[in-house]
Image (cartoon, rainbow over all chains, first blue to last red):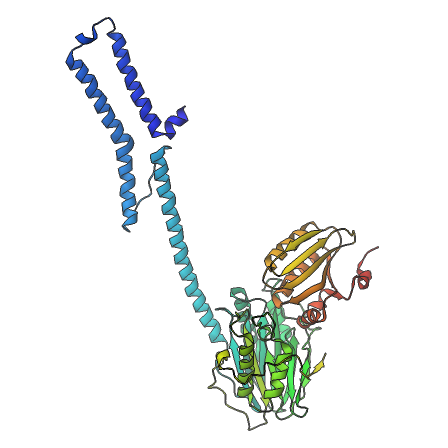
Length: 401
Length: 122
């Protein structure tokens, strides 16, 4: 009964008036012996006046005044002014309205905070994406004896693909890598690897030692589920000799001009960050090159790019396109044509992964090209694709384990 | 037998053998649905009794690098519990992906369950 009294203002008012009625009845019983009509008019007037005053007081203090407090805060909320939380221990209809107001405003505040936080995070992501894009080279390098052109595109604001060209002493290191997944975690690992490589490269003269140390540093600092595949080439300027070390990356595609076809090699090794010591699992291997041979490096975003029917672009199409375009074009043309072919293949299908493609053509000393003006981050548009290969799975490449 | 289905991947867990628990994959193992499957397999690892968990990739058509991370997680968790993970019946292109990244250097990849004899305790 007490709970109903507290929870319902209507019940409470009913009880007040019932009590008042009882009071009247008690007065009536008190004057029972007297003639009702003999009660002075002033007393009856006083009773009715008291009843009215009681009604007004109940109405004012139980309903009007608390509603007014709530309405003031509601108006403040609706007009965009500062509003206050309504403190009440009432459990009745007024209490429900007050608590409803408090909950609504709390939700508004939370939503507003989340919007602000979202905006802040978006700004920070934009800054992170900018920092990441500034880490990756924006210009193609000029390397003695080589014609190098790169194209890269991120699937999301922050990508997991990495590539770079580092020249130290008489060697240029060209590497391409891909972190598991993409987004913020992938980007952080990507930046870590990039920083490690740039920090320690001066202490080593070969890609093998460089990747052992990089792996060792990385492994201690990343989750066991994260890793980065990487393929690093080392070009010896003086000897005009190319070597590579694979760390679980995609196949190495080498177009042999003398054969007119590609030789595809599994790069081997194990992805960086998978094991504590990778020294027994990776090795530096020679890539014999002759003039006009072309090395194609790519990330899995290229091979796993899907078209509208769910079919993947695949390695065979890269090989086919390379075999068609490598004899006809320099690296700029090769990369451009493969990118067009890819864009034509995937059409409007949403890109799930970062895509990076590098063409390295051996042109001989003095014949190297300055491709620094070419935009690395521009990718071909399918609508411009007319003379694409759209190669079917009929590549004639030689596969080497 | 327990089935877990996602948009593009179905897995079936078979606990009937006391020497190993076999989990069959059908479909594509990529980021779509990976979280759901991962949760199911995480739960299976928590209660696994045999010393060997086998992933049967006979009907697995595709695996991406993100999913290799998932295999690595399962492998790491099982190793911590003194148990092992093995893969069987992987199609050539799936095996190729596993080989390329180098995960087969950590997780045994076998042509069929018969080749697993050395891992099965009597």
